[in-house]
Image (tube, rainbow, N blue to C red; front, side):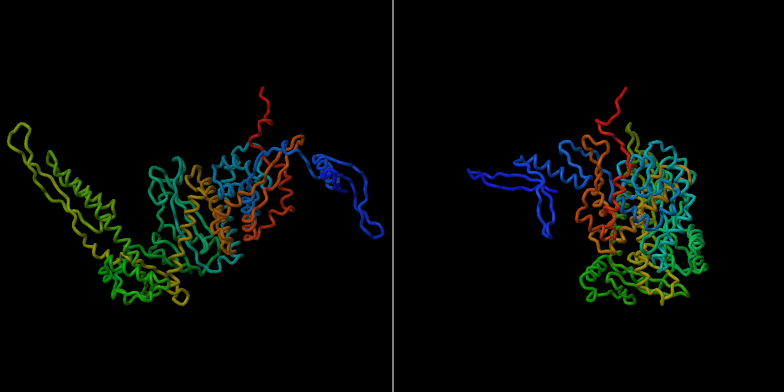
Length: 613
């Protein structure tokens, strides 16, 4: 049935509308409208009321209300969390961690809006997580969430093995090249048994710290992590970590890529003895001690020469004038650096010269030298205004401290010279002679040798040339930044630090949550890049998806609120299609989420508040 309108004109030319309730029927095979009730003239409001009543008769689920009686109660964060939830399930983490009640809630919170452990339960009611994760409605959380950290710590090896298995199933370990690094992060408080005072990049002065070892695939997926004591030396971790990786993941014939801070020949030999290969840069002291032929000639390349060469390479590498000092080097394919290979038994040393690196290092050193000279002049000025004799030792200690702080101990040596100054007495008697000391800087014997290595770094590998060419080795080592990027995201966006839990197992559980959150973000980033999405970074994609919420409305006279999904925008649907997840906002999928009774009302409106006594 529907309301049919008939329009006629009055004598004065005005339009008159008459309404009839009709239904469609078929007579002798011909469709007709059969009048049921003639209603005559109606106002627009009366006509709309009849239409609403007829629609309600056809669809009992329809609701028609006066807009003035509708109030928006709250908006629950939804679409960004649902996308991460599907990624979490795609790696079967919901099956592995099903018994750890709040595992996924902790991970999702870390990925989008990190909060303290207890703060997670303040954050969750503002999201739709209770509808699909079963977050407890009660505020009575006790210490259950901390017990979950203990459970995650105990399951750490199982989690790592599971992730590696999932990555292998997806072909992410087909190139058996694993990147390993270690970082420090600081703690709040002093009670944690594995936290120790120390200083390392990532630490914080005055705070105890812990170290975190991390192994990732070449695509940046973390599959191994371990919490270590705060003073653990990087180079001492390699043998134990690699042995654990081989036992846990049953890997063989793989290449470990690690930083120069872990590069020792003992570590290289250990990797080789365990059937694997390595690729690492050597630290500067080791490179200088190797005395590679032809390197000393590079000290004659000035800053001006290096800058001119860098400019020529940037403009047209094929027309660049190559200095004679680089005649036995080969121009790298990317056109900004040169390399040459020196073989020694099964090991290959790949020397890489970058003119921009030479300019940067020399300019930095000159800045530090100027600062050191200014500080030496300042302490000399103080020495020459002495009122009584001074000993040479304090002056030498000050000069050495300046050079050490500015990392110039291999550039200069401090020399202390005696100086005599005449001091007039206050009472006008015979002037006295005061013995003091001035410092001066003389070039260190190794200074000239250092300049030869300013634009140079050296890679060392035992992977045969047939499997890994020199250029491939350079490219593979440069991709080591994926582990550095992992640490950056885990510390900044996932907010690993500061660590506020105290016991070792809870620290390990906290780190596990942070690594899993990064794992989801890395999977999201790879999916976006693979699909060619305009959103290259997961943070920007999640921010856009977060605008799509579940909205809750209260209708006057209705006991239960009504929830709807904010209509996804074109951009949001594009992101979902790029991820192959457009189905997660379909009516079939949304219906149980919208009808769920698990939503938490964290702050009831004033008209719902309980009366006070």
